[in-house]
Image 1 (cartoon, rainbow, N blue to C red):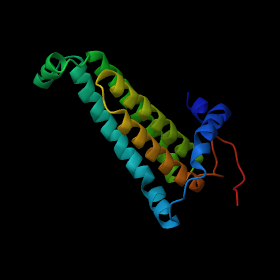
Image 2 (image 1 turned 120 degrees about the vertical axis):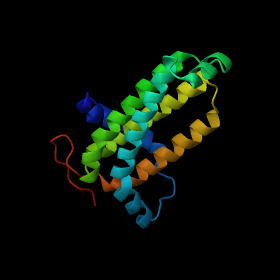
Image 3 (image 1 turned 90 degrees about the horizontal axis):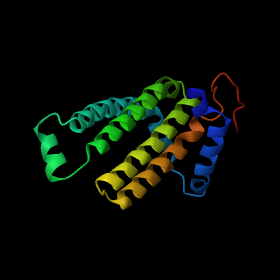
Image 4 (image 1 turned 45 degrees about the horizontal axis):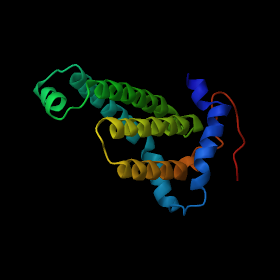
Length: 171
């Protein structure tokens, strides 16, 4: 599965998503460098929060705890939403932990894992839009900001060893 996420087809998809962001103004180098330095730790922390969120969602999907009765009965949120949400949060956590080591070494492989984690986060938000009628505006804005920041730090990872291949660093 992991080679599929970092393979040539995946990189073609990433290039298509990146295209609209290329013409946007760039962040100052000092801010980009700051984000690159904290990225592994932020991603790891996000992975931990995703696991705790998945556990909470599983509890709600199975009706455990008094709050689940309120949510399921009075707010009429389907337990299926919480089950699907838990699965997606576990995928996000997996990708985050998978990205940690490569991000610390500034390998493109780590950046690609956080890209896919961002994609899964968008799917998770779409789920909220469908099941609990969250705002689509928030979904669009958070996705755009997330991808913008992601593509801003991408040059720090380009040219690094990915999945056993060597790439020449671009100047």
